[in-house]
Image (cartoon, rainbow, N blue to C red; front, side, top):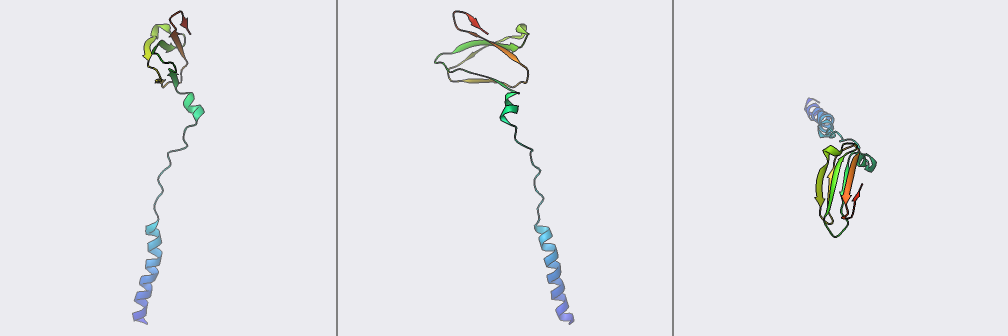
Length: 98
């Protein structure tokens, strides 16, 4: 019986240890992906859908002294990552559009 006990004990230990070694800890999740609505609240975009470059000024609402003059190429998109409201002025050649 002693000769049979050693292999049986080995098989029992192997059966108990092997599944525990095979378990892996899951990677922590990065959390839920941000919704489109959440992203919209944190970014302002300007897109030029014309065939010509367009000049514009952009600044935080109520702070025209902080205006930044920019030009956007046809088909281009300018992104401003901010949750603050921005004012954008376009020059159409005849008059400024706010």
